[in-house]
Length: 205
Image 1 (tube, helix red, strand yellow):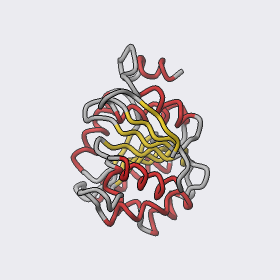
Image 2: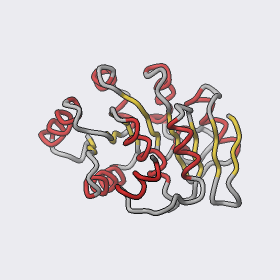
Image 3: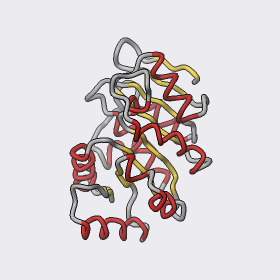
Image 4: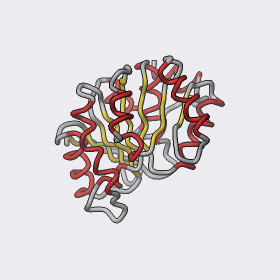
């Protein structure tokens, strides 16, 4: 089934190294950290499970331009995706939210500071959230040079959405950073996949 989505929606015949293992872990509702080089297709690792699971997938990203690019690419592929962010007109954000609450949207891209407001969390708690993806997950770790306090607030996500698998994705995370991300987002459980740098490997968090 993931192979069919890969081909029919995204136009690829085969998964790249490391992708399929992450997809399968998320489909098995396992919290998963994927450390993969830039350009290796990290986004597909959560986009394919999002489409197979149905419901709504939340995607957390720190970069407005990246969110806009991914949403545009998904819409071109025929996938219902939205972003609500500070660069958009209020009316556009309102329209996007209406499509989310109507159940039309499969993936919703948000910055961490917008997601973690009480108002947004309360509204999302009424919706069928089936997957949460945290992009640029190294921003969550104080061990890394890119630490962002607004990312650290994401430690609450696991408790706020119990039973929902979390995908954390990054291109830059050494062992200490990987363990820190897994501890904060997953409570120490879950799987960690590191691929593309030397050889793919997996370990339990």
